[in-house]
Length: 383
Image (cartoon, rainbow, N blue to C red):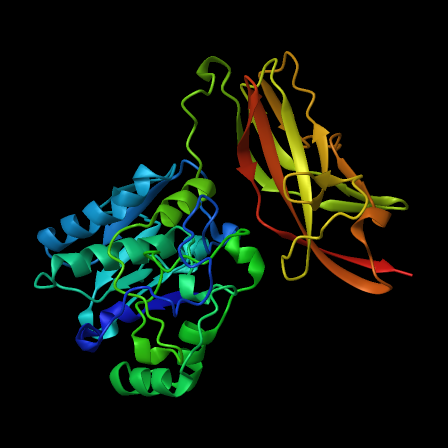
């Protein structure tokens, strides 16, 4: 999937913007706290991964500027961007102002042939530096798995759709379907990470006042907001300063988490390797959501994450005295995480659910997230 940005069209610069006012969509409009963000963890790269970036054209000046601003994300995320000039790459950047700016979202880039670009930047060496900064950080935000902030289902934006259609049909030559997807489509609530809407995000489109029916607008955002920094740090967490490096544990080679149905419930079998965890606590938790990735809330307190009320089931890995634990990598799977059917609040007929796996380790008195899987699908038929 490619995500477009409106910034690529010079006509936008001539529009009249407004700052935030009493016309803001909700009272949460200024909340850019630590849990904000529109992100797709299923398209997230491995934490700590080095992403290889190849430029397909462009002047040395332009390449250096783009990387200078793109690498701003590294300050807050456990991820590295490294320029290569030959061989395979994860990200391939093309410069063509006639095409606008767009990028694959996260690991969708892996589906693009090595001969093709995964990102186009609609800028050249004469482009204003503020604009280069915004476009570079915005598109590389998509590359790391972030979505447009105006797609938040809790934004409350009151669109003046005829004005939006007219503008993009006239200036960008977009058809109605493309405008609907890029401007009016909203992601489901699971992408918000339980957050508030952040109009200061670098991932937000600028919105002129006549794009809304109540005069609300969003100015050009040319720096990362506090919310941007927080969500990227959550997607790619760095090792905390108080982490005990002498006993540092980490999870690697997580490849899947198949489920087995038994008479009384589900057993989830995560396949992974946990290393350097001698004498440490390691907990594996499986969380359950509906088919739209909306967390299923607990009703009886039996299997629940007490921090957010979501149904989950934990199990401790038997790590004592083991420096490395290849979990479920033998011929017989020995480590399963169980949950009874009755806890999943199943309805009669077919229930399409999703689950994801989180692996935590303890250092001192604090628990740290080592790994968070993508969502897995499962169907359960209840009589």
